[in-house]
Image (cartoon, rainbow, N blue to C red; front, top):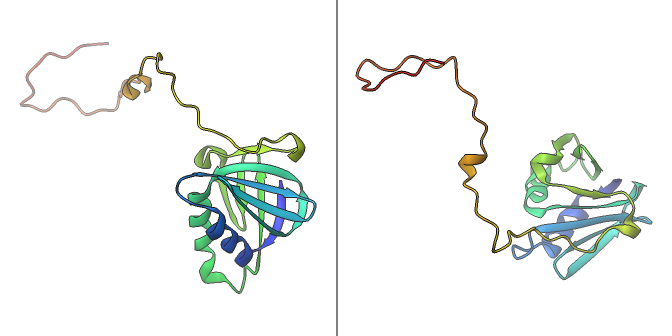
Length: 155
């Protein structure tokens, strides 16, 4: 998905559409229009679409990044946004997909209207997040302090 949109129009759309109750923003680029939807609110503006598509991301992260371009308003009358399976590029900034939790759908006709977070089932046991961390012994660690009481375990 790739499009060029007026920066000020995009910021205004985000202000109108996004609210805290719905953290996910749906962006659709199709037929010369970029449409933003969040919850039951939807708005759009004209844009130059290079590749159509639909993506979902957290609107708070997009707002923060767009605000960083505010001081350079003269240089960024229009801003290009490209979403790929690897991440998102907004102007001169590229962010990995993992950092933003982006879902991309190349075909707008088959893209869902909404996405929901998967909630754990009631009968699923809760896993302590510390148990999910990999165990890799630190071989570069310094020896125990002189006042350490205990025994060392040799590998």
